[in-house]
Amino acid sequence: MTAEPRVRSLDDPEILVHSPAAIIDAVPPYPPRTEREAEFYTLADGEMFINLGPQHPSTHGVLRVVLKLDGERVVDLDPVLGYLHRGVEKICENGDWHHAISNCDPLEYIASMFSEAMPVLVAEKLLDLDVPRRAEYIRVLAWELNRISSHALFIGWLALDLGGLTPILYGFIERDEIVEMLAALTGQKLLFNYLRIGGVNGDLNHEFLSRLGDWMGHAAKRIEDQMRLMNENEIFVGRTRGLGVLTRETALRTCVTGPPLRATGVPYDVRRAHPYSVYPELEFDIPTRTEGDSYARYLLHLEEIRQSIHIIDQVLHQMPDGPVMAKLPRLLRVPPGRAWVAFESPRGQYGAYGISDGTDQPFRLRIHDPSYFTLQAVGELVPGHLVADTMAIMASLDPIMGGIDK
Amino acid sequence: MEVTRTGTPGATAVAEAADAAVATPIVVPNTQWLPADPSAYGGGRPPTITHLAELELQEKGDNGRWGALDIIPTKADYLLDYLRLNSLWPLLSGLACCAMEMMSAATSINDMDRFNMFPFRASPRQADVLIVAGTLTTKMAGPLIRLWEQMPEPKWCVAMGDCTCSGGRYKRSYATVQGIDRVMPVDVYVPGCPPRPEGLIYGMMKLQQLILERRGQWNDRRVGPSVPAGV
Image 1 (tube, one colour):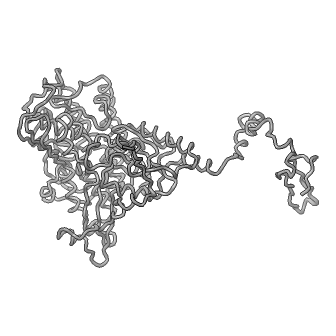
Image 2 (cartoon, chains in turn red, purple):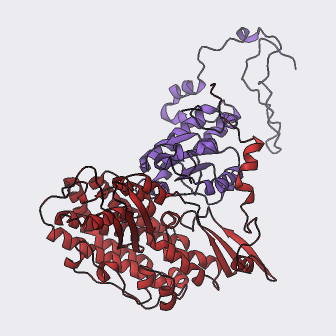
Image 3 (cartoon, helix red, strand yellow):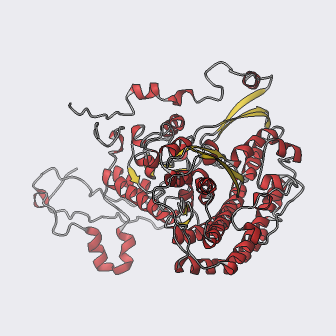
C-alpha cells in the first residue's frame, strides 16, 4: 500500500464545501423542529437577531446565544450549546475508575479539584471506604484553596465584562499564586489530578506549605483591597445593582444552586445541608443575601472567600497525622451498584450518579453540573435588559462551558 | 550630465548667496548617480570597509549610534516582517482549559506584553495570531475556520495544548478534531496539558523567530495531518 500524502490546502474548494462555516447563521438552516423554535425564529415588526458567540470574549468559552432584539433591548434569547462537547462521559466508560479521575479533570477547568472529585466520591461510596482523616483534611484544604482562586477569577471577569480591565489583573495575581501553590502540591497547575480513590496522591510538602504561609499572610488584605477597588465604584454599582434579579421561585424552579441561589436568600450549601468529608468538624457560615441581583452575587462571592480562608485556617490547625491513602488493591473492582454523590463546587452543587457493574470500569458516570442549571436562568433573567447588560448578567451567573457541554 | 573622473564623489558644491536679503535656494548638485563607465571608481569593487555604520561608530562612540541608524539599507519585506513580529496581536479566542493559561500569560505575573504580543483583540479583523487554546470539537471547527478566514493576511496560527496539537487526551473521543492541523495551517505547536504560560510565551517567541526567518513566505503553508497516512 502506498502512503498517500493527506495534505490539503485551504484553497482546496472541497474543504470549504464540507466545512460548516458557511451555515453558522443566527437562524438555523433547517425548518423549526419544535413550537418554541418556530415561535422564537419568527420576527415581529422591528425585531432582529444577533448572534452572540460562539467566539465572544464575554461568553466565557464557546457558548452561542441567539438574541432577539427590539432596538437595543433583548426580547428573547436562545442559547445554543455543544461547542465544547468532548464526550467526557463516554470516555470515562472506556477507562477504569482511576482514569476517570483525570478524564473528569477538564470539565470544570477553573476549579478542577472539584470535578475530579466526582469519580473519587462515587467509587468511595460504592466501595464503602474509610478514607484516612489526614487525606480528608488535605482534600478540604485543596478544595477551599481552589474555591478561592475560582472566586477571584469570577470577580475579575465580572468587571472585565463591564469594561474594567484592572480587577482581572488583580484576580489573576491571586489565582496564579494559589495555582502555583497547588502545583507545588500536585505537580500540575490547572488539571491537578490529585485526588485518588481512597485518599490523595501525596502528602503536603515543604514548598506547598511555605507558599501557603506566604499567601495566608496577605489573603485577608487582598480582599480588603478588592472591596476598596470595586464595592463603591459608581460605574460598577450602577451596572450591577438591580440588574438580573433572580427571584427565589425562579431560582428554585430552574434548579439553580450555589452563589446565585444563596444571593436570593436560600441558605442551601451542600457542605451544610448534606455534609460530606470533614466539613461537620469545621466551623463556617453560609453567607446569604436577599436582593438576588448581580451586585448581591458579587458581594456573596467576596464573603465566601472570607469563609474559605476561615476554613483553611481551621484545617491547618486541626490537621491530624497519619497516612494519606487507604489500602486498596491495585486493580480496583468496584462492587456493582448505583451511587449518587453531591458536593459544593464554587458554582453550586456538583453531582455525579455512577453505576458500576462490578468490573474495574464505570458502567456509567452521569455528570450533574451546576453551570448547566445556572445557564437555564439566563433565559429568565436577560429578556427586558439591554444588550450590554446581557454580559453583566451572564458573567455574574458565572457559567463554565466545560461542565455544561461535558 | 557630464561625468568626469576627476570630480570628487559625494562632495557638494553650494552656490553662493548673491544677496543676504533675498534668500536664494541652495542648489545641491546630484552626485548620487551611477557611473556610465562600468570601470569607473575601481571597477565597482566594494570598498574595503563595507559597514559604514560601524565606521561611523568608531569615530563617534556611543553618540554615533543614532546617526548611523538614519539610513538602513534593507528590503521592504524585511522591514515589514520586523514590524509585524514586534506587534503580534493575538485573537482572544479561548476554547477550553488552555484559555486559562493563555489569559494567565497575558496578565500581571507572566506579562506577555513585555515581548510585544499583548493586545488581545476580540475581532478577527484586527488580529495577527490565532492562538487556538483548548480542545477543538467538530461543532466548533466550522466557526474556528471562519474566524481564521476572517483574519487578514499575513496571519499565523499557534496550536496551544495537546488537544490542538494531536488530539491529546481526547484522541479517541467521537466529538473532537484530532489536531487542528487537519483543518488549518499551524506555525507553532506548544504541547502540554495545558502548557504553562512560560511555554506559550516561548512558543510565541519561536513564532517571532519564524516570521523573521521566513521572509514573507507565509502563504504557501499546507493543511493536513503532519503524520503520514497509516501512522
